[in-house]
Image 1: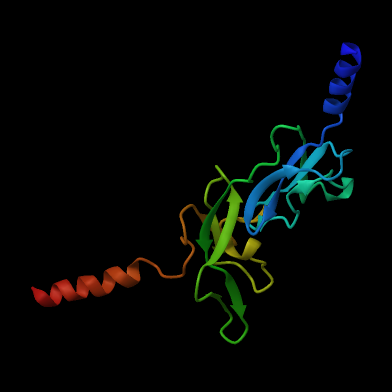
Image 2: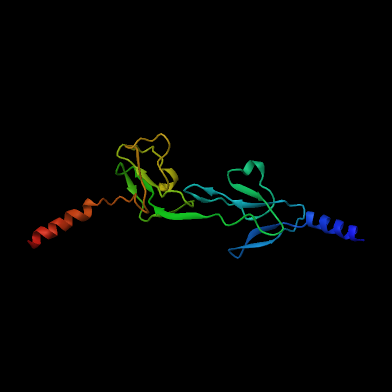
Length: 182
């Protein structure tokens, strides 16, 4: 009889449902998978300087064709392996080319950028020799495109650093004010 109980315990634990996280009302929540045959949990991946992929947290395995947008891990019955994907957010400005003025203009407000946790903040903007055919990578988020020289594109490493407002616009009036006070 003991042998039968041991066999049942081993057999049932070998086929116990795994736990995976899923989003429940915007909260990552662990639960047993309804499919007892599931062995993996899915989660989104960071599309660098763009955001998280649309892959849902859940039970199952990623489709082989979705390797750039889906990640999976081997689940256990005790703990969900698909933990929250950690990211950093910061802001960068986008630029558009004005045919009427034949120049690049900065957007009115900075857009939100998302990168994997631990990634350096990077913003980019068109350089002095960027033509109207130049494409600003990731709406100004992230580094310049591979192969772009520093006159076609410039990048910087702080939040909202790619705005068009040069420091001289603030310093020149300040100096004029100080001179008028002397």
